Image 1: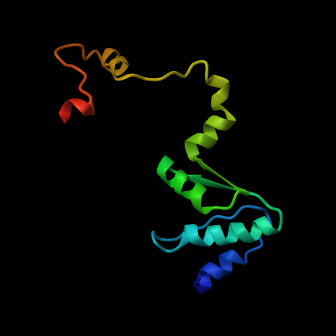
Image 2: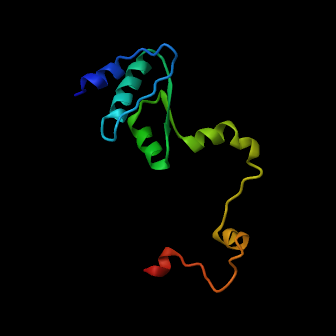
Image 3: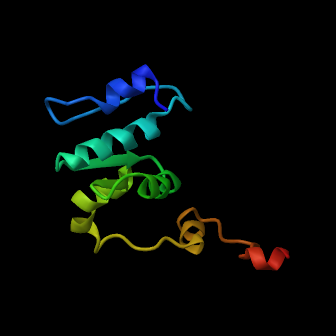
Length: 116
């Protein structure tokens, strides 16, 4: 069941193709956008949903129709420009941080398994 405010979003026909939704936590933004996206998919339209973290992105992938591409903000940036610099990117290891910050000394790496 949707509220009047949610229905206004679901029935929206954006003129410029951009829809921004501002509301408090728990107000039903994601639910409303899912319903809006389902209606837009019937019209043959696609969308993009930007999340601020991986968990939110993965949740959105389960909820939105296939016509909506769900990405993190970082994922969008990497997809558009990051590949250009991929040869400069590498996996940063904890030992790299220790060396870069000159923290050499009496320390050791402990894995979670060591705590059990």
